[in-house]
Length: 246
Image (cartoon, rainbow, N blue to C red; front, side, top):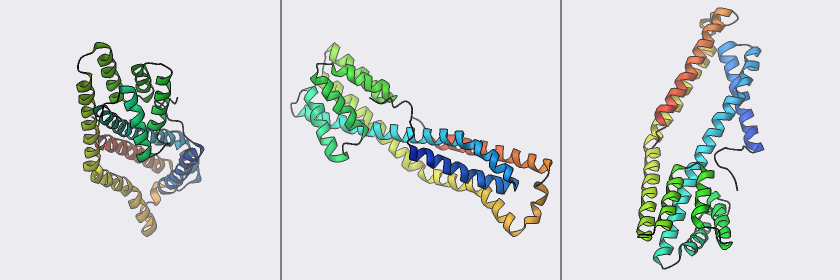
């Protein structure tokens, strides 16, 4: 099964990163340097762009997986209340999950694998621990540990299961609320990130003589490079500010 701790880009996603890099390099070379050499230097941005895009897509996949894992557990909890055994509860939960989200979701594939392995007499807690390790998601890891302790230690297993599911549900809902609250600020951040490019474009088109001293000489090139580095650091800092982690 797939290791979700690293993100493997498809050919389409790699082409998208290449297109973004070429577009960004073209904008930087014209706005900051007015030189084709800037385009050549800008192409070295492919690796940072690819890394940033990969991190974004991986985080998005993790959030989707956590939400779907929570949905699967809630369906399993409902099946347990109906009198099903733990193993059958996950079978019924997957069937309900597929009806809502389809077979292509990662959790549908994972629990199809888990249910198949359970039929081969592999312990359910061991399979959940394997999923937790491959997913790299803290909540799934915590659930698998609690689940394993409850199975081995006895006690009120149903109560422990429901309490764990409720805690995961609360955290996922809180994460979605935070994303909703910060959506407006993130939009403002994206707009502010584009402002420097807009200013350079406006001045370059309407009053190009104001920017002429910055092009075609080493001093101007150095100043524009310093400004570009400062701009990149500011964008990075703004991203960290709006990226709230629980």
